[in-house]
Image 1 (tube, rainbow, N blue to C red):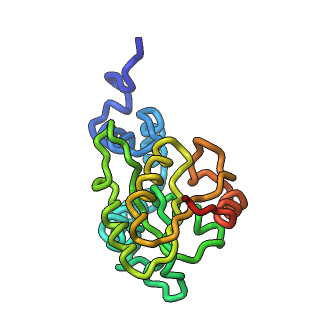
Image 2: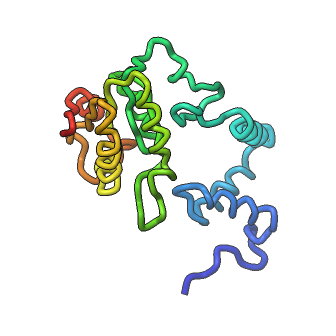
Length: 208
């Protein structure tokens, strides 16, 4: 039988500490034990350092918002990428999450715009086109766009989402391409190295 993380008399039984552990454990990839270790690590830091973290989180909440055009997080509206006149505005790269945008930007091989879906189609979970902003993407294609790069992850859900976008945009006269299969099947773009992503971008193929 699994023992509870906190027990009477333990440090984690302190209400303030338990609250911090509970909130940290809500973050992706952080379980209760990791949250407890992080909380205790913060208690060992100088108060000035912890206050800097608190201030940074406060600024993060108050000063950063999703771009109304592409969904990218930034301090300005529209985001720096959408506002950059040097970007090729005729190409839109569609990604699942913000991490994927960051990964592609690291390659320095792509100079167009982005559209962040924020997820993939998953009918069993109640996630349809509206929930991930596909109608908004299709409205963007009414502008002078010559190519849409579907950079969803090479998973069942990612492929299904890419096919849906492809079918929905057939009548718009836009070239639809998909990242080359240099990406391992079932992997996430976020974890691909720069050279693999750069190759996938440069050898992307047109979807028929």
